[in-house]
Length: 455
Image: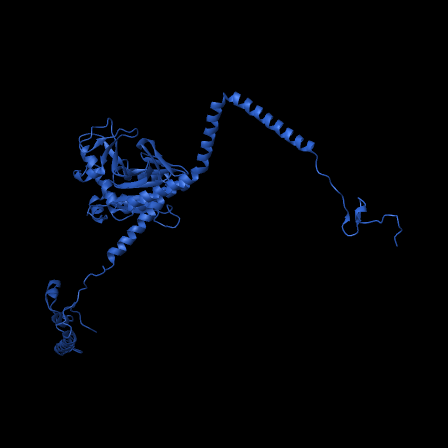
């Protein structure tokens, strides 16, 4: 009941600290004042001004804005290159694998390299001590590195190289067909034995293992030198390489070869008799005797001495995993696959070599299967139709004839004496036995014995 004249309590007269029995007390927050926002802006401007002054101080210490911009740009370029180097290295590796695989899979590639070495050696026949030992092939150009002091003037179609680096003769590949045929070289080095060792500036680098002391060592990183040695041995073991390869125990973990002492003993015995060595040696597709190559790992001092003696005599070419004492060519490879030999002017990337050799070996197997399989559409050899009906009759007639001859031989054979001593028989010589027919030889088997009486 409401009293007149007294205002009633309604919703507009709620207490500012009203208590809600469900959610608890409710607090009313006011909006921030404009002075607080202005304070934040002033602080931000002060911080930016301090940063600008600090940057200006640093720029003055670096020599000005121009030098500062150059240095920042250089640092950004180096950072970009550092982060992009793995991708560029992978692409470079794949290009090297494709280039080497394309060259090694082509049967004409090995013939071209050997022909270049032979032609260069024939052109250097009047230069004593000059030896071609390496070949670089790239798109449309080939270069042969030559060890000579001084380098002779090249005859046509060879051209001198104007680029810095090892001394070499260059030749456009379009003029390679005009090279004269190489003459056989005298001395221990009778024929080239080139192998690919890697890529250098987009060119395939080949090294002639028979051009020097014939003792080649692979040194450096353990894993990298093992891969390089196995790739070189696989190349020499391919068809048409001109080499007969013997891999000893310890070179490959999945291949158990002969012991090095046994191989050395056989080679030393064969080297003492050149006639038998040439007769027992293997031959390549051209009919020439193949070069014997021994691939071994970590030989002892005495074994290294024997290997050096065999290599110096020209009997074999030795590939050794690790350093050995003696006159040799040393290929040094690091963990990234870079192989160098300063005395040979060799600096190449051998990392793509293993994959390229694997591709070439698979291509060789496919080529051999294609050559051994019958060609499609080739006419098969069939016998004349007129002979087919006569074959069963001929076979039956032949069986009857053989049966009759066997029965006739049994009837003509004299009965063996049982109680009487046989008369002395005439001994028949080997030439007479070969000259008599088969039936007569069967009849005289008993009479042609030693003549002793039978029990």
